[in-house]
Image (tube, rainbow, N blue to C red; front, top):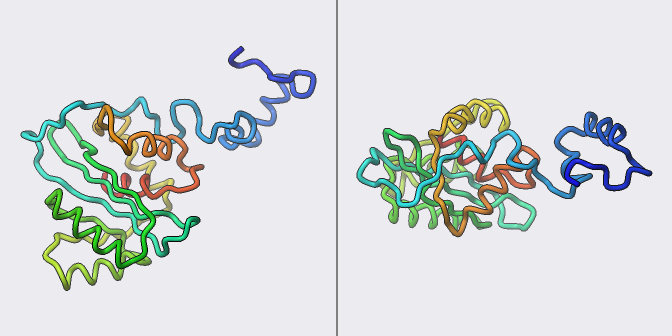
Length: 205
């Protein structure tokens, strides 16, 4: 039964509760083989609104938020870009791009996605590979690039922006090829193996 001890002769409920109080959110992954709490951790999936067809006629602007990485190796975070439209009813996540890339491919992809969505602003974190990317794009293109200086740590930045999500101001599509992966990372944050999509979201908000 849900909530019962699986093997009470080894660990009864009081013993499991004691372990959980020490491990915190890591208990979910170690003892239940589920890396994220049911429904989400810091960010609850139930907080998001859902849309079928985006209300394009109400959009006031579109922005793209990039989280870049240094190398394309499997263990490194991928590059991630969230394309978000703003309206009077909130923020609509239109597209998520995520791929492990070396710098030259990443730069080309920033330009191609900007050409596709015509954003009012392209946000790029002004550190690591993002610093070079900002400088080169400003010199070689007319993209509306904004360098973002991150303040505090990743968890604090997401905590500061989470009230907008909890208030129902952030909309996700009812279906999309990237949706399951996005929701999984968000629900696992900050214990997720990668957090590039979460960083892009908090930066955008």
